[in-house]
Length: 610
Image 1 (spheres, rainbow, N blue to C red):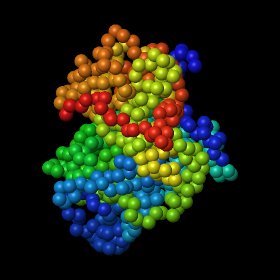
Image 2: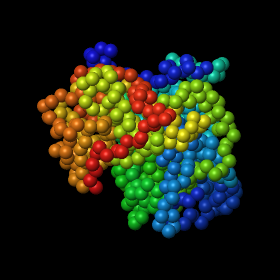
Image 3: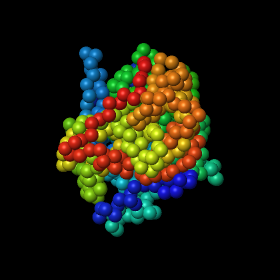
Image 4: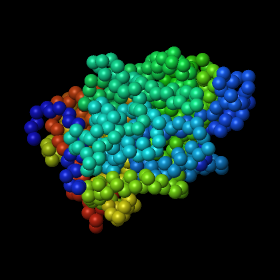
């Protein structure tokens, strides 16, 4: 392969492989009583003085059930390992973990929650697709759109991962049609697209200056109207490949929501929910943690806090996502009035149930009481038969590829921690592959966001314990990035490590996973760039020489400066290799067998001081 610079390539693995195949709740702090005349979903009570002409026997107040979730990422089957569990606080101060997730169970929980609620709407906060396991990702996420249609999802915002394959592919998921390269997966059956609208209020076409999809949508039932505005994080170009956001401009979330809230009000829609693919970080990982203790929103940090504080009071509730965290909080709006802000973790492990009390007289939500709670998608309920049928259909198509063994492990290879065992394993695999491309390769760096799941020792199917299948590898690394080699000076390498905790990563560090031989100390008691202790950085026991040149392997996303690592976009001597999953597969096959499985790395290359 030529060593001259080549453009970063984004392509899906489908073309390459298809030929092979023929609860306890968390309640927000809005605790004031409902209006005395609040009706149930059956509309049993009425305020005669508030009736409008022609609205005989209709209650003034009507409870609207808002069910929501976010960051499904194509997880149709129950996620494995820590990705398929939630932590629950117990009354005695202890915690326990609960197995959660899987659309067969999510469908059952949502359908049960809707029972008896005639006024019910289901919304999502983005990243329904992208970074998906093989059963969905192999087919450009058509299976997930089919599942969401069956779930009766009413509306969702776009997330950053909806742009993994570009705006044109997102348009196909919305409007239907067979894939332009891979065609139709089921003979004679054209993909029909999403039954629900994707909202992209702050994503503009650079040429037309208009949103690429609908900016808002209005849910209506018997005179009740609730508007939904959908946005993704303004920094989407920083977390998606350049090819995925080509020709697009991403506007400020607050500015956009405030603009369309005014527009909805002019149309007579005064009840508004914002679907925002940006989130926060609660102080506890337990889904039922009270983030309003001791005061509204005190237990949550991150970008959503400032966003929530500045969105117009015309918006009555915020459904958020992106951080994969669980919370049901209240954060004061600009007028000082509490407003509910929720997120249901990720991968379909939770759903949120929020009650919006609609005032028919004013057309607005009675914000004095908006109770909101997260509920676990437990696996102790009956599976939804239509979802089982869907999984079976797509699983059968994927099986010839997904069931292939690609390696063997002696124990769980976790994705948890500042430095994780799976992160070390991937970095080592990319270093080994880099040395095949160029023996002068010195080290490898892997972005944590590119690692989507752990490898679990327990068999998921019939493959046997300790066997790593292609499907499991795909779930860990689903992006189809290439492994790229670049040259950097030692000074640039040090700067890359400091970019983990500075710039766009200052408030939420992105700690790169590193290959064997690279070591350093990360002192989290310090601030800014000082958190990376420069004098501690060593490669194979020797200090980094600022003037020396180092050959570094990364994936194509990092090589393009993604995730705020701008220095990684300045490398020279580019060499573009094969698929990153192919590099992991090759490493596992070369270093493990059924009789001699590979052990999980110790994850001791970064010394973390807290």
